[in-house]
Image 1 (cartoon, rainbow, N blue to C red):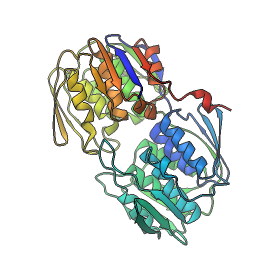
Image 2 (spheres, rainbow, N blue to C red):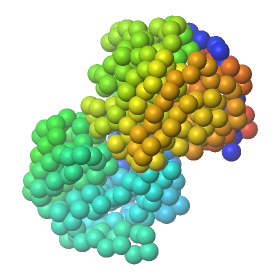
Image 3 (cartoon, rainbow, N blue to C red):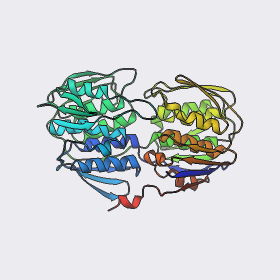
Image 4 (cartoon, rainbow, N blue to C red):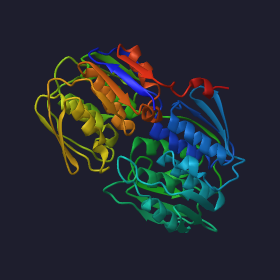
Length: 430
C-alpha cells in the first residue's frame, strides 16, 4: 500500500475547498437507480468509494458518463440486473444501498451481506426488518440476502431511537418511494446526508413529508422522473481541515462548507479554545495556542459525529489537561489509539471510552492507518509532530478524502504521497 510522509511543524495558511460529501453521494447514486431517465449529479467527489459505487451501478445496467470532473450523468432506464456483484459489494459497506433500489425496481434483490469492519460491526438487521415490513420475503443463503416481493406495500417502520440508522433509513426510504400506499418511518436518521437524499428524491417526484424530521411519511408513486442534484459539502472533510488549521497554529479557511451541518464540531473547537469565524459558506480558524482539554461523546446528528472522533483524539492528545472521549456508535473506533501512543500520546482505552492526558509534543514515527478516519487522525498528528511521520495504509484515505495530500500541501504542509498516485480526475471526464 502507499504511504503518506509528513514533516511536522508547518502552520497551515490560506484556504482549502471542501469536496462533495462521500456519505452524501453514495445514497444519491443508489437513488438514481430508481429513475427511468437521466440524473445529473454535481459536486461528486472523485474518491475510491464513489468510483466503486459508480462501477456497481454500471454493472447492474445503468449508463454513467462523466461530463466533467465532479459532474456525473446517470441513465438507469436500462437497469437490467437485480444481482449485485460480490467483488464490488465487499469493497465497501455503502454499496448495500443498492438493495432497496433493486427491490423497488425489480421486486427482487440479491445482495451479499456486508460483514463487520475494523471500526466495529454494522449489522443490517433494520434494513431487512424494513424490507419485511414492506412485504418482502427475505432469506439468507451463504452470506447473500435474497429479497422478493410481488408488490411492495406501505407500512409503519419503527427504527431504534438510540441509533437512528442512516443506512436503514435510506434503504427503506428508497423502497417505500415506489411502494403501494403510505409508509411511515419513525426515528428516521436526521443526518444531513439523509436529508440530502430525501430532497433529491422529492425533486424527482417522490412524495415525502417530514423532510429533515425524525418521522417520514412517504406516499408511494409508480415512477420517479429525472432530476439534477448537487452533493452537499463533506462535513467530515471540512471538520478535518478545520482541526488541522487549529492544531498547526495557522490562520486557515475552509470554503464551500455548510456551517449549519457542523454545529457540534464548531462548538467543541471553541470549547478547546480555538477562534472560529463563520462567513456563511466558509469557516476560518485561528490557532496559535495549546488547546484546552475537552470531553466528547459521539451521537447521531445533531450530536458529535463518530467520523470525527479520532480527529478530536488528536486534539485531546496535545491539550492542556485530561480529556474523556466516549464512543457510543462503533465499538472499535479506537484503532488509532495505539498508533497515537507510538507518537507519544498518553491515551488509555477503557471499553467505549478513551482517557487522554495531554502532552506538550508528539513525535514523528512510523504508523499505520487501519481505516479512513484513523488515517486522517494520523495525518493531523503528523502535521503537529516533531520530526517525520510515515503513515502506511494511505489507500484508506483515498476512499474518503479527495486529494488530501495536495490540498494540505497547497496550504503550506510538508506532506507527500509515496508509492502510488491518487484516483485521477482525468478518468472522470468526457
